[in-house]
Length: 172
Ligand SMILES: Nc1ncnc2c1ncn2[C@@H]1O[C@H](COP(=O)(O)OP(=O)(O)OP(=O)(O)O)[C@@H](O)[C@H]1O
Ligand SMILES: O=C(O)C1=C[C@@H](O)[C@@H](O)[C@H](O)C1
Ligand SMILES: [Mg+2]
Image 1 (spheres, rainbow, N blue to C red):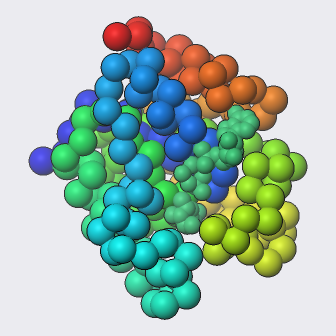
Image 2 (image 1 turned 180 degrees about the vertical axis):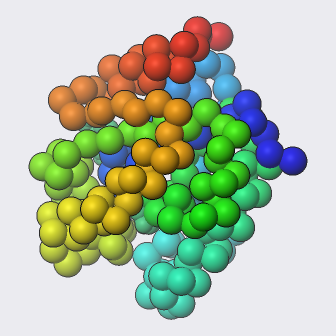
C-alpha cells in the first residue's frame, strides 16, 4: 500500500534533499528516510560502487525497488535519489503523494556538488553534465511536484520554512 501521507522530496543531486529532508522531519516531528541510504544499506556498497560494478540501468532497477518499498512503508519525510523520477512507474506512484521539488540553478549546483566523486553522474564535467541532466529531467520533476521550492540563495532552514508554507503544514 502506498503511504499517501508521506512528504516526498525530489530534485537534482546536491540541491539539498537530504539536508532539508532532515530539517523538515525535525520540524514536523516525523521520521526521515532517504532511498539512497536504503540502497547503500541493502547492497552493502556505495552508490558509486554500484554504478562502476553494474552500470546505470542496474542501479535504476535497484533504485526503483527501493523507492517503491519506501513509499509503501514510510509516512514521514522521504528523500528520493535524484534520478528516481526517470522511471514512469515511480512517477505514477507519486501521483497520490505530496511531492516537493527542490530546484536550483547551475552555478548553485556546481557550488554544492563541487568535484565530489561520490556523485558518479557529475564526476567528469560537472557544469555540462548538470545542464544535460536538467534538460532531460526538469519536466519530470515538474510533472510529479505538488510544490516547487527554489533553493538558490536560501539557507537550508529558509528552504525548509518555504516548503512548510507551500505544503501549508504546521510544526509538531
Ligand atoms: N540551501 C542550501 N544552501 C547552501 N548549501 C546547501 C543547501 N542545502 C544543502 N546544501 C549543501 O549542499 C550539499 C548537498 O546537499 P545534500 O546532500 O542535502 O543534497 P542532496 O539533494 O541530498 O544530494 P544527492 O542527490 O546527491 O543525495 C551539502 O554540502 C549541503 O550542506
Ligand atoms: O541524479 C541521479 O541520477 C543520482 C542522484 C543521487 O541521489 C544518487 O541516487 C545517484 O548518484 C544518482
Ligand atoms: Mg541526498
